[in-house]
Image (cartoon, rainbow, N blue to C red):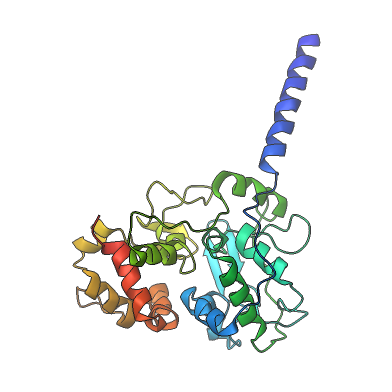
Length: 294
C-alpha cells in the first residue's frame, strides 16, 4: 500500500508540473501602446494580410469585415469574427491593448481567452508596435456593422479554450521580426512579409497532427490546414515550375503561371484581394526572398 501511495504521489506531482507548464502564459515583449496609429498606413496592412478574405462572407452577402465563411480543418470549422468597430458585435469595445494582445500573444479580452491558431497570430506577432497601432486605427475607421459573429464548430476537447495554452507552449513563440544583417534590405522586407503580415508561412508550411507548424520545412506545402491543400513555394519548387522573379511577380498580380495556367481557389482570392494591390517594392521583395541568390 505504501508503494502505491508513493507512486500516486509521484504521478500527481508530475501531473501538476505538466499542468503548470502547459497552462503557463505565453507572452512576448511588451509593446509601446502610447503610439497613435495612422489609418491610411493601416489600410495597406489590411491589404497585405488579405484580412477581407477571412473576415468577409461575400457569398452570403455580408458586408466587408463583418464575419467570414467557414474555415474547415481536421479540428472543426472556424469562423473569422466581425472586426468592424461595432461595439456589440465587432471589436468597437476593444482597446489598443486588447487588440495588441490578440495579434501579439493570441489572446482575446477576458481570462484565458486563448485564440485558435486558425487566426495566424504566430505571424502577426512579428509586426512592429507602430504597425499594430496603424492596423487598429484602420479597423476603428471602418463602418460599424451590427452583424453577430458565428460561433466556431469545434468538438471536445478542442472547444476548451484554456487547453490552447498548451498548444502555444509547444508551438508558439511570440516575438518581433529581427532583420538578418547579412542580407539586403529588400530580402529582409520579403522575409518579413512572407513570415509576418502576409502570413504565407501559415498556409504553405506543413503541420503536424496537433496543428503545429513544421518549422523544419518552411513553405514546403501543406495539407489539412485552414487553407486546405496548398503547394510548396520553396525556391526549389518554384524554379522547378518555371518561375523566376519576374514570373513570380506576374503570378502574384495577374494569376498567370509559367505553365499558362491560372491560379484559382483560395490563392486566386489572395491575388484579387491582396497581392495584386501590393506596392511594386513589396512584390519585388517577396520575389527576392523566395527566389533570390543564397
